[in-house]
Amino acid sequence: MTGKPKSSTRRTGKVSVSINTCILRGENGEVLGGVETLRDLSQFFQLRKKISEKYSFHDMVSRNAAMRGILDILPDVAESEATVLLCGDSGTGKELFARAVHNLSHRNGGPLVVVNCGAFPEHLLESEIFGVRRGAYTGAVETRPGRMDMAQGGTLFLDEIGDLPLSLQVKLLRVLENREYQPLGDMQAKRADVRFIAATNRNLETMVEEGSFRRRWMKRAGLQP
Image 1 (cartoon, rainbow, N blue to C red):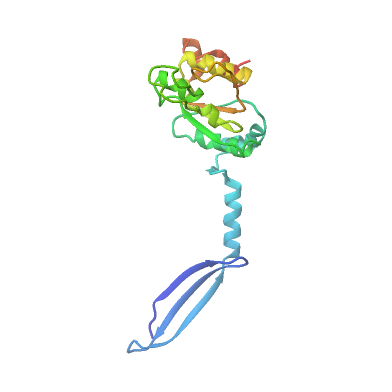
Image 2: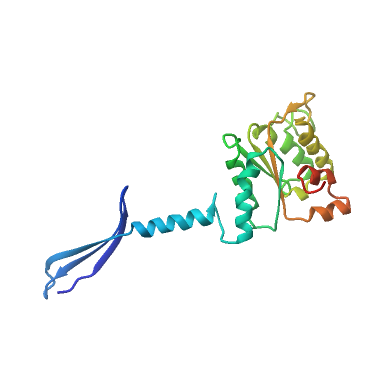
């Protein structure tokens, strides 16, 4: 008798099992019967869950001791309202950390709004962040909310903060210190109920020495006394 085994895995609410089946055939190929075996996989899935819980954290997985140390303090950082600056090379997961900080904070019911400071020309970046009122400048044919408006009650993530022009650094510092901002063309200041997270792949300390980045930004992020 010959038979070609088939296997599958099923997970139920109580027991995880692996099922192997095989059809038994006679010499002429006729079906004579079948065999089915069950294997309990509960311990396998429990072990996989324990490993996943130990080495994964909000879409981030690492067994590196230094990285695990950062992940351990992340909930404490998230609970505060402090401005967070994430530094690291491109592709190292800075946005994943920003999302984790937002999701672990009391602002997780609000939006996480992302602005890539290197993706807009300088004259458009200000209106993109703060918004613009109709007629504020040539081409402003409608009133548009900025990312600051969209992030109210949540978190504003300023990616590639090292590309932020000096003039805009001044305006954002005012928001950080006074929690007020003014859309382009608007005479009224607005309250910023926003938590700020910034990220960069550039050496900001070198930029401060060169005069292309304001030292007060570093102080706001707690990187300088």
